[in-house]
Length: 358
Ligand SMILES: O=C(CO)[C@@H](O)[C@H](O)[C@H](O)[C@H](O)COP(=O)(O)O
Ligand SMILES: [Zn+2]
Image (cartoon, rainbow, N blue to C red; front, side, top):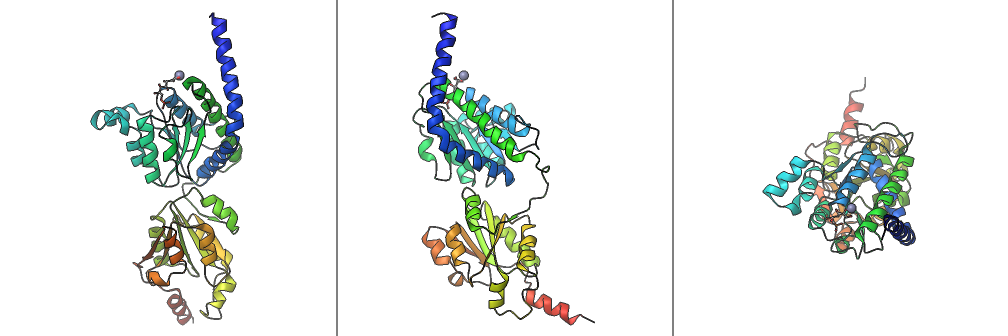
């Protein structure tokens, strides 16, 4: 073959592979793009890894997230785990090569983050170890693979996503991976253009629409749920919510609507603060990811809708009295009653305020 034949055949094969991939990957790609954007919007970071050419792909993705792709927008947090030669050689030398990515994920990965794992065969031991560690840390995995998906594919949970190029040749698979990287970055650019610079403070989001909330939480597992009135927020609440958040990757707080509070019979003047205000204050706490409202007497329907992995109430609630406890436990979830470290009561606080009035 001449030089012309080589390039002609490589381009022809690449184009054919791109065509097959377009058909197979359209749906999972759309899902991956949505979820990657949601991860970044929620303050999550992207860790990426791969070997050889795939290490280059991992770096390519990280560079375009940190810097930009085609549009000017704020910097986004991404780290390619093959780039720090001191860290990589130390782990490979002192532990083993298989751990070079996993160890860094232990150090850097946070619940809700995304690991983008590149392996054309799906069989690189260090990429597989990375995916396992990411899963243990409450991250979700976006696997870019090829061939039959190797040993990586069966490890993926429903919350993870695989973009498997329907091709056997490593180089062709990598060529499609590069197109996927660029397409993912286009979506990210479009979603963040005009966005305010990253705030150093994390704040939660008020989401009244339970379907939108469910969608936003799908990949943020383990999902922690708690509920209450939270009328006049005090130190006990803040500490309790921080401890609840530490039990998983995402904390949703369900707030009794004003009508629901009135039915609780806490007093004619309760709630003191409207549900809008109560939700806004909770969303301002670092521990809280999402706040929503429920109108029933109990949050059972909301719990059934969100299917949390961890259901939590304050220590004044014994587990057997926690609404939805049976339901969460039956689905394999945990139910916790967190003792208040700072005993404060909104009712007592209000009495004190009233008593001190001139
Ligand atoms: O770039 C290429 C081939 O095009 C090579 O460097 C290739 O990435 C290496 O052989 C990798 O070790 C292959 O790993 P994987 O894709 O099977 O996980
Ligand atoms: Zn290559």
